[in-house]
Length: 452
Ligand SMILES: Cc1cc2nc3c(=O)[nH]c(=O)nc-3n(C[C@H](O)[C@H](O)[C@H](O)COP(=O)(O)OP(=O)(O)OC[C@H]3O[C@@H](n4cnc5c(N)ncnc54)[C@H](O)[C@@H]3O)c2cc1C
Image 1 (cartoon, rainbow, N blue to C red):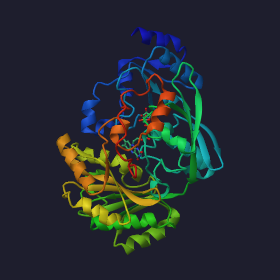
Image 2 (image 1 turned 30 degrees about the vertical axis):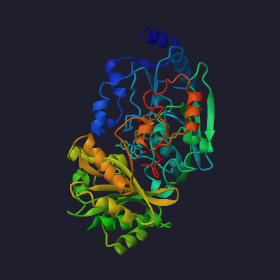
Image 3 (image 1 turned 90 degrees about the horizontal axis):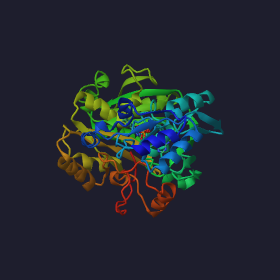
Image 4 (image 1 turned 180 degrees about the vertical axis):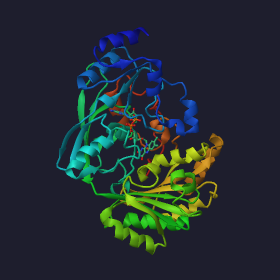
């Protein structure tokens, strides 16, 4: 506690709070969606929250924390759902929301401070007819650095691939945790050292991202009488290079009824493809849907649907939120499938799961291939049951990430090699960053072919 008092004195005018309620609130992320993490993360709180507004203030925080060997956990919007931004060992929580602003928009690229919310970035870039290529379904509250350090992909990934694809991040400015912090600029493949590393190897201060054309988007829901046909349609849509699209989210019958706002739109017993497509591609999508026997049950401009929110807020991580509103015990895993015949690959997995475990699958691109990422939804029983389901999915060729754990390595999405470890030792020699998220176990697993 003495160290904390010294820390507070030494950071000078940097805004901070040690009010227990505020600190508890900021020490949480969205991992309550997991029944296991809900239990494991209960009571994990920081000692103090600091809110640096610029680099000088951030450096003052780092220097004082290093001097007193206090743990540091960085937080953006706090929307991570695997406990990434929960401080496991107390200490200082750095709230980056005041460290925000768009720095430049030039030649199809945007550079922004770490704590800038993605929706704010898009508001700026859309004035020039551009937008971020890829964003998560939490884009309204999540920050750009939080997405880089904790996220994987989302809207746009059916065209541009997951965040980690070469070219999807142009540059990162990162600060080391040393007596005298250093700022380094990562470009090219070096970016992967920090992408999805949960803020365990440096604090990101600036992010530079490539932009894409900001089309007028349409939200289209296509209903199908069976799920395999929904997948066939989704895969074909992903392959149609002339159709401009941002989301292909496929939900098996039962799920539309579990997502209350969508329930009136999708006929009973039908599966659905929830799409974001450019207005200019509307007729092409109508034709494709008809070719596959689908019925368009809803079609409107982005954000104007009868379900009261953007359609992408029913996809990716948001799907689980809606389903849990209907039945809180529903949970899921995170599987990835790829291959020449995704429909057949999926059918092999699917036959193990009855109608009480409906699938949600997002169609994305991974390393040039069309891929599916998703999971069956099932009623949580216990960890052993969940492990059996994961083993079943894996036995049929699905890569499964354990999103009910908080360790970068244990989740099994990011491969950590010797290069990563060396980088981490340089950037955080005193092991202060987000402690507990990075075990030193040797690398064994292969990386996920596609991240979700
Ligand atoms: C309902 C729901 C839907 C979701 N949908 C998606 C989705 O579509 N796609 C997806 O990829 N993810 C999704 N997520 C996960 C999460 O919302 C995203 O990854 C989001 O981009 C995280 O941003 P954030 O600012 O909230 O980060 P936080 O939760 O604050 O932090 C995430 C991680 O990044 C680290 N971090 C934050 N800022 C910095 C920094 N400046 N420097 C270094 N490390 C930092 C934190 O320590 C933490 O480890 C979803 C989560 C929920 C709850």
